[in-house]
Image (cartoon, rainbow over all chains, first blue to last red; front, side, top):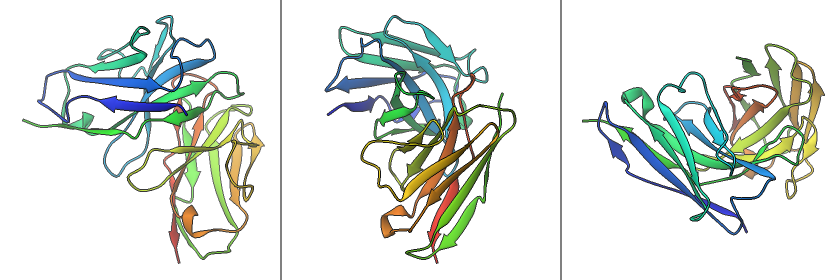
Length: 122
Length: 107
């Protein structure tokens, strides 16, 4: 059974960099059938797509965050990571990692991590 | 960006009720529309992909329809475990965008 697990600091200071890692188990991140993505959800609000990465390193980012976001992949560790710099309180959210299934029409997010709350505060 | 508008934003219903949630896209997205269920404190769960395809393991009381700009998610007979928030998502073009959510509450 595929599992995704987010990890990283739960508290980040304003203007610093938020760094999270998603570890994939039960399957290979190097499959050509999937992209891997980050999505966030501010407390009490809706979902926002941050960006996605292919095992080759090809990325897509949300233009609203593109200037501050970097997503990378480490196939040897079966992990992908998110860096978001110059954070403010508006970046406080639960951050989810997810698998994007390319074989299905509309490429849905079919597996999700449990999510991790990151609070931006001094 | 393609805007996704869900209605209603919340609804109250009883166990056994038929529930319909609507999602409208700001431009045509063909059938590139997915539906997710999110229970409190949990990650979203895929219910329907490509507007009308039931994800494996999802009960058949869930169904989806629509194409172009107008889509619906229907729960034919609401069960206690269905009280949750539902989100639509378009994957027609980047950036991927979600609807604002519909919270289904117990009447």
